[in-house]
Length: 255
Length: 113
Image 1: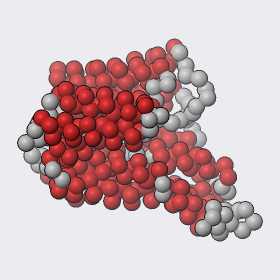
Image 2 (image 1 turned 180 degrees about the horizontal axis):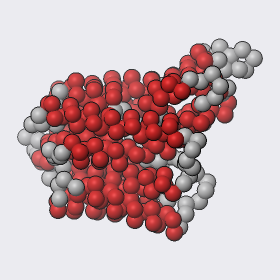
Image 3 (image 1 turned 180 degrees about the vertical axis):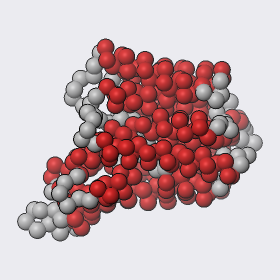
Image 4 (image 1 turned 90 degrees about the vertical axis):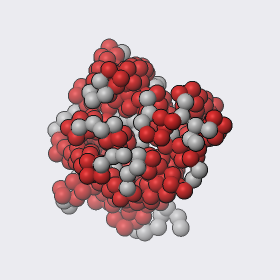
């Protein structure tokens, strides 16, 4: 199988773009996603929730940081309003991803309802790869690429959620404890990767410092207030010292 | 023990607000500047809130992680960051090191007993 399969005269049609998306996803993207969703499955098991809830979350709410926040806050007994606010703020980074990608997918012959469906597949990894491939694909084949890439990752995430859940139940306590630790260390490293921008350093340090402190002071609102305060402080830093324009997009990942 | 109906509602609300951002993105695409101020502030808050949640998970964990000593969690975190850096900023290497150190420390201290 070569990358040129199914392309007549170098033009990508929809089936070949779909296949290309599947092939691009299988490899590093699937491995990283499966490792992180494996950790999510373990977390849900450790929170004494049913496997069906873990799968429901990955199926419907597919964006790992928000899923972890929802499970954690449910475990802490937070109100549904607070959970909605916290998940909403955590996953707000999806908005710029969709806003930048959708104009490149839309065009004559691309129905709007298809964009609303495909939007569910837009997350950090699929955004990076689709943005990279879009210039070499004709408009009518771009959505097919995203669908191929995104559904492959989505399916792998579901499988990994179930595997992580089963592993946490079957493995010795020391190992399953370590698996629950997978998500915090994974997200921390993703955040540390972004610290090439001064505003991100401020956000990381202020958020990590204020988070536990304000959580102790007020378990309901503490984390939200910490995120708003530290994020606004970081935004002030970014306004004052703008990042170099070399990189665009690339917000913290996790799905 | 979390009540299943409440947990389902929490996850469903999380899913709704998550898809809400995606749908809103389709609606406003082409009408707002992705490099604009609102988007920049939203990205900063999302990043900082995730940092706050992670720090709370490590320093003040809920559930089974609460049975482990703080120094073990901090040690595993430090090991993960160190290996990530030494392995040429490879996230998977850092994650593997972090959870391996965690498993060893927990086994040694018998914290998961």
